[in-house]
Length: 124
Image (tube, rainbow, N blue to C red; front, side):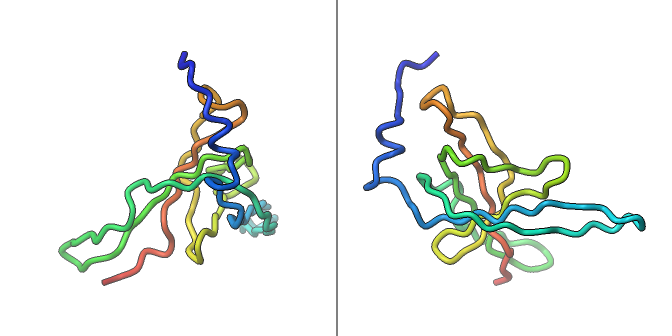
C-alpha cells in the first residue's frame, strides 16, 4: 500500500477547480418500456488532469476529434448504475461523459479518479 497521501494537494484551492458541474440523470422506465431521464445539476470541486487530450482520429469514413480528461474528486461521480445513466460533467464550457470511476482512496481518503470522454464527437 502506498504511503503517499495527496489529500492536501487535491484539496488545495490553488490546485482544485471549483467550477465543475455534474448533471445526474435518474432513469425511469414506463409501462411501454420507454426510458425517461430526470436531470439534477450539482456544482462540485476536483482536480482536472489531461487524460488523452484532444486527438484527431482519421478514419476511412472521415475524421473526428476525440478527447478525455481525468477528474480526482471526493464527489461521488458515477459511470452508470441501475436507475441512473452515466454522469455528464461540464468543465471549461465543454461537456464530458463519465466512462470509468476508479477508487483512488489509497492516495487520499474518499477520492475517486473519474475518466471522462468529450461529447459530442466533432467532425473535422
